[in-house]
Amino acid sequence: MAMPKGLALAFFASCFSCYLISVPSLASSDEFLQCLREKIPSELVYTQSSSNFTDVLASSIKNPKFFTSATVRPVCIVTPSEASQVQAAVLCGRKLGVRLRVRSGGHDYEGLSYRSACPYEVFGVVDLASLRAVSVDRSESTAWVDSGATIGELYYAIAKNDSQAAFPAGECPTIGVGGHFSGGGLGMIMRKHGLSIDKVVDAKLVNAEGDLLDRAGMGEDLFWAIRGGGGGSFGVVLSWKVQLVQVPPTVTVFSIGKTLDQCAIDILTKWQDVAPSLPSDLTVRVKVQGQQAVFMALYLGTCSSLVSTMGDKFPELNMTSADCRSMTWLESAALSFTDMSSTGTVEDALLSRTPSMSISTKGKSDYVRSPISKDAWKKIFTWFAKNGSGIIMLEPHGGFMDTVPSAATPYPHRSGVLYVIQYIVFWQGDGAASTTWLAKFYDFMGHHVSKNPRQAYVNFRDLDIGQNAAAGGNLSSTFESGKVWGERYFMGNYQRLASVKAAVDPTDYFRNEQSVPPLLQRSK
Image (cartoon, rainbow, N blue to C red; front, side):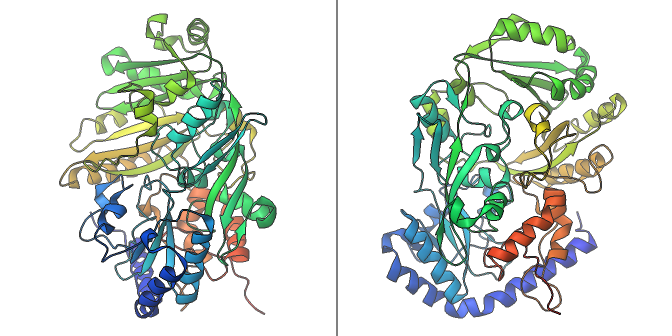
């Protein structure tokens, strides 16, 4: 599929600017590596000539699409064990003109934390996987969690300290905390307790000057920006202090599939109105795949209460007690994202960091503010009978999400949002059929989702919607060029994010293909 002319020009300009920026870096990359060796133990710095460089690079990559001979790789990977080493890496990079990308978990949908989309860029990676401590303070119901921990490790540490404590975050245990929190943090209890960022109360960050700052030191504007403004723009967040939430000793889940012959379209059409208005302790999300819709729920309560609620609010699904599975909240967090099944132990599910490199993926996202009609759903289902079809996951908002003003955090998709759509395709080998299906289906769905702008979720990163590009001889990305993607992720919050960027990183040191550019004031 040909790239649209506008995007093609932006991509060319972005790569050209990458080339211009990287020319001095090519000459200074050896000096950069020497600077790192003087300040950081050599066993923590892996260069391309290191025998285990490739293994370290692959250690948290979840998408083999970005692990090929054509992938633009970093000149080195720094694996810090303490904050001072991150500070040293930033100072060396700033001094010698080598940018750094920061990786915490590897679920990065476009791989921007460890690769460049521009073929000439010279950069290093700070891999935070060794910074993974979780410290729970039961007396104040808080925890400090390092960015290199996974949310599975966070969940496990919290529940082992207090079985009735939890934290609102995502549904894939291998997601790295740093990237997840940076973009917002959707999850199965967000309707009750909000996004991850709604419960972040402090953080420790290394800024573009190499300073180590907490919330008081960084100020409220930067603290606002890092909680949802996307990773890779404002500095290196090393750890987060989060407020824990309380959950009952027993929760209930169900997974109910409905085919077209079982009125899947009628039920799904009704779900759009019901799901966002259900009691906040109940979340019912949907997976559409093939000719079936699967309704998956987490309820912070007992089966008998859930059956009563569903009978009253959503009788069309015909949910009964036979559909219930009761368990602890921790056990529910270990269930599969796509089918709510369990394989192995809770520890296996939540603590494993072994990457899967067998299946490539591509994702996109949309927000729905007005219900999609029954006739439209009939047409939508025809797409899932086509060659290369993937799945969509529908995650309802409402509840707590409706109570948070859109400007309270950079994540703006709050009141009035019915649900978010995540589009995913998977493939092995040649992915042409899958990626073509996704692109065409996404275009078709444009008639049925939010508009002006068509909104997207920054944690479902998608370079198709736009990339940074230089303009007017300025080698940094510009506020205006960033609008094409920035307002889709952040809507009215994009300008404030760019203003914060200008205040804390005016030279745009922390930069990638979709990092927030600085909004620089023109001199008079």
